[in-house]
Length: 399
Image (cartoon, rainbow, N blue to C red; front, top):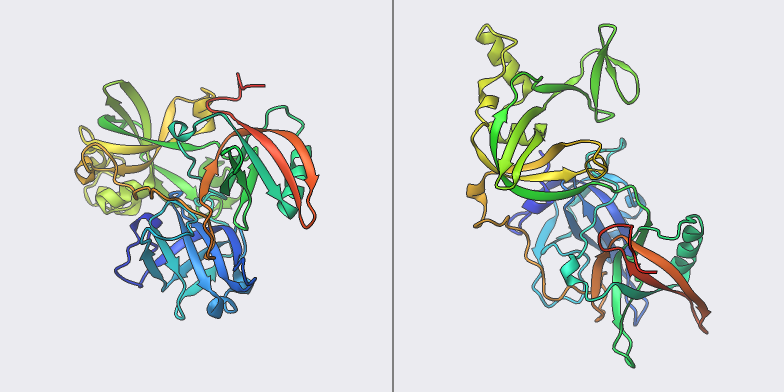
């Protein structure tokens, strides 16, 4: 069974199969009774989509040994539910969530899958941030871990992502502050440069003088070059007898603001034309012109697409002007000029399947910490920080 992207899951059936990475795994504990309620997981896929999954206490023994943060799995035969809107427990902004059933199968993938990133985030927009600083209190072990991790970074201004924090309000002042919950994770100066944006463009030209596919090493997920007449992986330096072949067409696209060089990726080309590289090579052989540029690829010219672009570190640092597309969508599939996404819930609330009432904010990104105090309460330790938002760049931040 082929894998389905998380954004395509619906509540209409249970015959699903997805390939995902467990970004976060935590136990659900009832705060009043201290009873174990089950396991919570945040899964991410290769499109950086995220979804919350829950394994009830009665099924947890069958999956506990296999659950590991960072591990990639194939998950099948599960139920998908849509949030009703009155839940107190929301892990991500996806309107759907997954429930494990008796027939659910969770299979580890022993090799890493580079297409699925180590972590994905859904930061709130700048327009949602009322001010550029917020107090954060990390309790117990997370506070200790944060202090240790912070000491390893001597920079004055350190980018940090806090994921799945809990929002509270001081009764006396009404000031908002953040604290941790079992699902809370922090990432200090993460290697997470790539961002995605979408734009509506017209394909002005498909470069038929460039090679229209790459030789590929599946295990390393890297391109293969020819060295001394043999295929060699650019990553592991091994010679390969038969590399895979993946589409890679170079295009010149434009909108009202100008033109861009954009590379169209293999997965999207296959999805649109319904054929892979080997199919087009066979068509060329049958036509008696093995070296010709396939007409079906040239036919992308003059078509309009909503293109999701990867904004890589190289683009930001102006080391490259060639963009890579992650997703191509026909504007006919759009609603007006906007890409249909899961609607944001007006009440994004605390994580875990426990019964709690405090709302949460999913992610804060690129913030610079300044340690204020470390206090010890009678029954628990807490570490308090003042975090200043780095809204646009690491330059010009408030002192």
